[in-house]
Image (cartoon, rainbow, N blue to C red; front, side):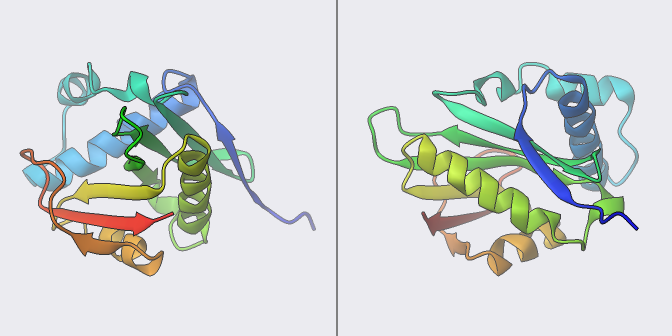
Length: 164
């Protein structure tokens, strides 16, 4: 019997698997926020000009994680300090519900932290919403601690950081 394994790879945010994962991510977080299913038009609007194009070296990185070859999740890293301040932001971290609880989140976070280090970051920061309890638990379990806000916005309710 073949053993199913996780694999990770850098991928363009506009590649088909990455696009599908980003759509699923936005659908889930928007639907939870609005307490109703997001429409395709709302998902399109949310993804338009969302800054994901910066998730390529030298400004960032984007990874897709697969389980048994099937696209299971994604995540990105964005350098915040052009002046060499050393901070990177963890962004668009997502695992499809069918793949949660199988260890993929930790592998994805490790790969994104390695990517941030390779870009010169010494600290990872992130922001999220209070209602995204599962995501917050994953971050804390992987060494992220609550920090003061490093920026503000309408969907930013809690901030975390970790030294790399």
